[in-house]
Figure 1 (cartoon, rainbow, N blue to C red):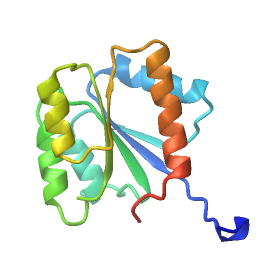
Figure 2: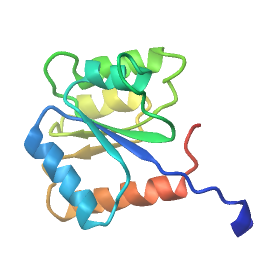
Figure 3: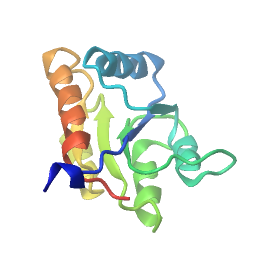
Figure 4: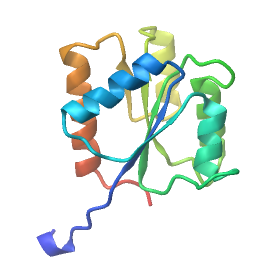
Length: 146
């Protein structure tokens, strides 16, 4: 591809996490790695779906990537994924699970929902930072759904 043919788009991030400390850790990790993408934070799956659909608010525009916690009150991450994948407009959304769960069952269930990756939050040290770097490289390298 010729350089002049490349279209650089700003990728928005939708962070869906009910834990303020975890959300702040993600935001700090992005800042530390000079990832300045616009970030919207929702504290549950229902609010995230409203934001994606533009219910009573300005919808999140594509391209975007969703960082999703699994264990949330109200609509949890799996319920969110069920609704997201059933919605013909949203079903091709790129989702990375960002969770405290190391359970094999949760990981397998997440991948059955076609997530792009599964990152465990408790790896907040060097491996978490590698995950943040990987996310930054992902959306600057991969062409996302329009």
